[in-house]
Image (cartoon, rainbow, N blue to C red):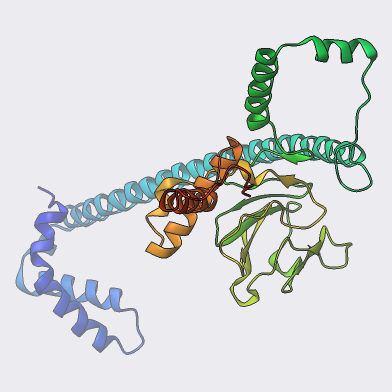
Length: 349
């Protein structure tokens, strides 16, 4: 009865020392030959194994064939496992290529839409500039005699209602020539999308597929930024919205088509309406910081941010800011403390 590997392994502690001694005796000869010679010498000297020659030969051949079959089966299993692994890896590579192609297609479509939005925003900005008078105020628009009569004929109630409706509309409207901030309180330009917090600005610049980090040119100055590829005209070049802390500005390859550039604001108490002056601007009155991030700020900074947010909402509703409310309270207290004084002719700003 042939021995299985588990049973045969029980004799390894005896066979290994023997094999080591034979190998030491080999002195350059084939140690396997010596091992077999030693084993058959033992059978010849200590047993009657060789008394039946043909049977001995068949027994040796049978043992050899059994072990060779085990090796062949093992090799076949390894080859099958290797083939399955190779097929799986090939499928994964193909799936990765398909995903990458789909992602590149999505990015190309996204870039095209972004450029269209930026082009439209630039057109609206120019139109808004043209609508301004030379002194920066809105140009006076002429009306017809019929429109003038309608205005004169309207009663006070209609005027009030119209003003309230206009105020509500103004709250929803963007500042002329600006864009609505994205979910990261930033905007977009021809070559990039940007997000911001009060302390920093993250800009994701699209680059051609295959671009390496050694080809990237990203030069930071206190108030300027140049970005592009070596040997080519800069993709982005101009004055930043405001000064930055150069030592805390850096860039990294985010993926094969995107470079992430991070700017640390020098003034960490303001919202930028653009990254580079002259590029599309956002309406900072529409910025809505995540409340969850306020908990990460220290007490003084958090109070300042909350005050800024409150004042922005008050201005949007046409109501007094916190400072104006404070002045009004102080004036009321002063008037209450001096009833003998006549304030009816006073004008307060």
